[in-house]
Length: 165
Image (tube, rainbow, N blue to C red; front, side, top):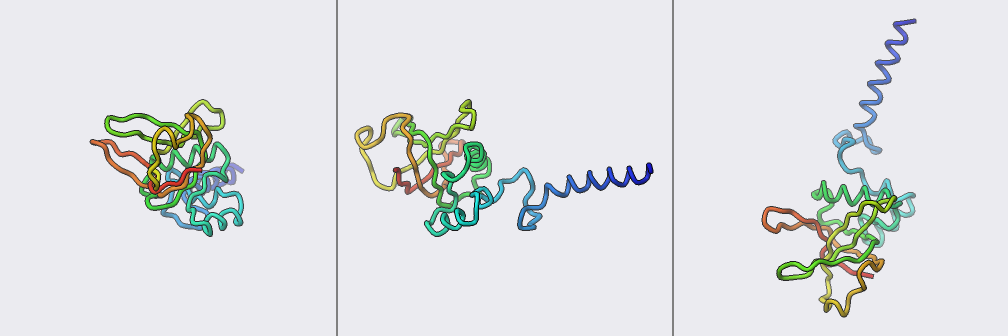
């Protein structure tokens, strides 16, 4: 009886360890601490296909608030996984004045609205600020190509060639 219990415990531990290292497609190169494929979060194959057909690689508008917050976190921690992908997101409009320009962002709060993250965007069409921009905290949808840039030693994420709705 003790031997069977030991074998069961060892198998349980092995399964829990190895179960976390295999993705849905069986690719063992991704582990639990790397971002998952965003198509898995889309909710259904139809939604994932719709995103692909419309040219959007990562559609954050179809995810729950918790998943959106998590995915934006992944974008900031693992930016290389998202470079060049078209991202669509919905959140609050925000801006900040820098030394020589304004920075515009789409801010997303988590499910409890205690924390927020955002991604800067640069519109494809020049617009005059503040006349052609929404009021602060207005809900917006932004679609653009994910990119990174450096200012000094700091790296920042942004959506370039963006369209704001």
